Image 1 (cartoon, one colour):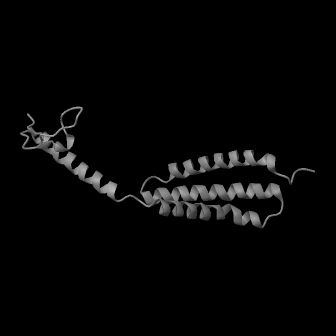
Image 2: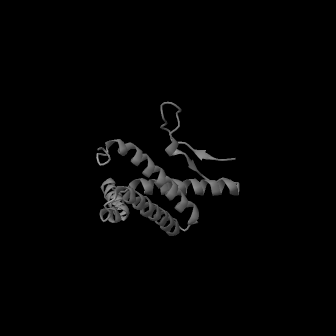
Image 3: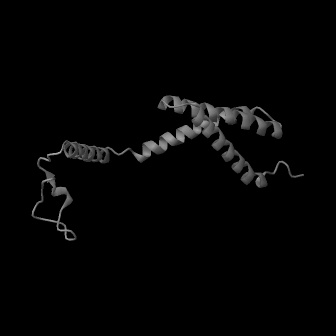
Length: 144
């Protein structure tokens, strides 16, 4: 049996303020562990809410990551004049970079490398295909 103490002031809907319920001494070891875990989770939640990350730092990190990632396919494309070869080189270099970044991220996370690298590669190729398909009608080089 769980013994609780409820303060005199309560919420208007229920008459009980959830913050005011305190456990005295549950007899069951399972209830003791549950009470300790609940209190620990509540403390961790409060600590996490206080230390929110800066959205400006997150935006800057994201922009830097996109900039660095875009350099891999763009640098080889600068030195190639033929458009067909340029598209092929960009797709190959971007695919290698996507698989590499997916593998590095998985390795840093301590998980399997193969599945995240494949996920990055497939997702990146889908994004490349969609972007190419959306922007191809605006290409003026092929018009004669």
